[in-house]
Length: 513
Image 1 (tube, rainbow, N blue to C red):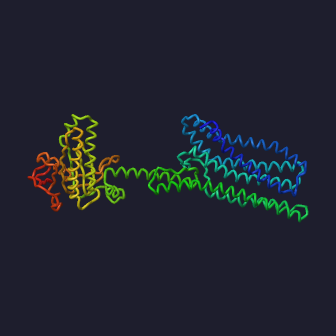
Image 2: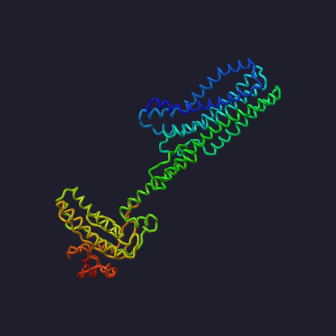
Image 3: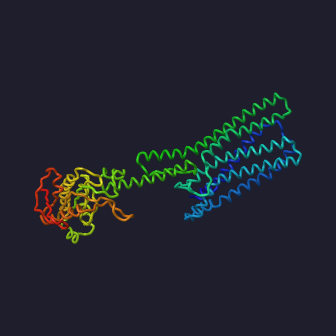
């Protein structure tokens, strides 16, 4: 930010208010020129000029000084930003409060100064013996000027506030959360627009008709003059009305276009766009709510995509839709355990980074094999994998899926070993145990750290079966419970019934050939 930009930003609201007053005075001056039925006497004109020489500079100075005083926190905040320093929170919040309330203060200030003029000028004219019609016209002219100026200032200040000031002070929106601020609501804008485009012209025409009714000039001439004045004033008010309508529509359309733009992005699944909030009215509040909603959708999308790395898309969508209970339920599932053989010696003789690369390569392939057949990897325990088929999303054919996944894991292990041999490392070997039975499936853990886990004898037996591969020199062992659910679709070889820890009777086991 340059010094010029700093100066311009600090004084935008002040200059905007001055411009609004100049426009208001110009409009009234033009209207006054049309009302020549009662020309002022030279003496009264000289009195008016003397009052102007004193009152106008004083009113200007009072307005500027009060504006600068109310803007002190705003200017201080801008100075700190210009020095690229961190603004203390109390100064930042004070500056935002003053900025949002400044349009109301300036409008009240403008109206107060013009009401002062509407009292001061007639009072002095009365003291100098001016005619009643002069006093009345002066009063209504000043009051009329104040009304027009206030309306114009209302829309000009709002335009500058939204387009220039708010983006600097509220880059992330959140205007409605600023405490102790007044709101320029949509109904307030529309009421001001109706007042500007209807009531102000109506009051102006009443003033013209009132002055004409007391004219002592020739009626034909008065009517001709009245027609000219009404036509000219109508064109002027139409021009001002069109300008104010464009200003108001711009102040309303700009945030609505922002909202539509972001909603279109959300519609297409893109959550990285934000509504540029520039007001604290109903539209601004809607924009902030949409931004909050977008953040929520972005987080949900992130969770969804992250969750999809652990389960298949089918299982993920079922869980996120709430169709799967995670509170705890007894389910018949097939549990698969896989454990690497003789991996510890490799760890001791291989650089750590290479060990991580090798085991991650193995896990990647095994994970894809399990997901390919609708399984869920529950956890990695060192160099061991625990997976389940049939939970959390139930499938009737979960034993078949588990056996097919085991065969796919065998196939993928061959591919992993080919890469290892090319890199000069010994091949890997693993043992897989499969058992079908009933488990308790639930989210288990502390309130801050939960994991989907299985509890029960089925899990223990599947782990024991995996260990039996060492004893029999096999790669895949399954229980009789799993085998009876396969309907003879796989080449199996029965192994001797074996006692395992936790079982009083020998367990019938089979291996995949």
